[in-house]
Image 1 (spheres, rainbow, N blue to C red):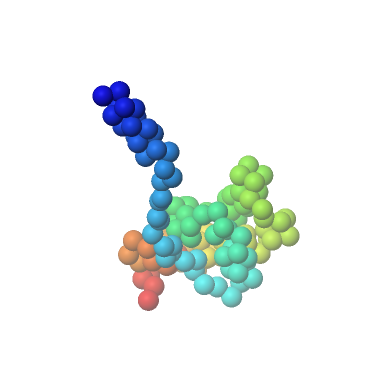
Image 2 (image 1 turned 135 degrees about the horizontal axis):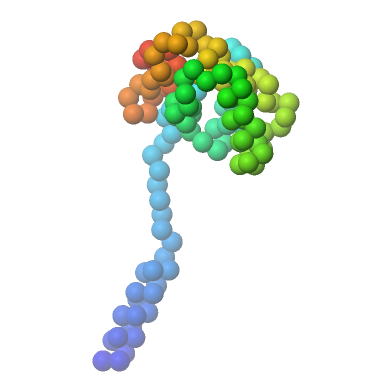
Length: 127
C-alpha cells in the first residue's frame, strides 16, 4: 500500500512539474496606415511591447502634450527601447492619427471593426 501511495505522489508531482503551454490567438489589430514617417517607426518600435488596439483606449482628442508624456513614460518608466531621435516622428504620427490634430478629432471616438480589426480614428469601418 505504501508503494502505491508513493507512486501516486510521484505521479502527481511529475504532472505538476510539467510545463504549461499557453497558445494566444494571432494578433489582427493594425495601426492606421499613414504616409507619415512615424507610422513605420511605430510599427517597428511600439508593437514590440503592445497591441495596436492599445491606442483605442487612449482619449481620442488627446493633445500633443499627452502623446509626448505617453512616449516619455514608455521610455523612462517602462524602459521601452525607443531612441530619443525616434520620438518626434512617432509623436507626429500618434497625434495626427489618433489624437487632437487628426481630421475630425472632435468627431466620433476611434472604432475597431469587429473584435480584432483595424483601429480607425475617424470611426469609419475599415475594409
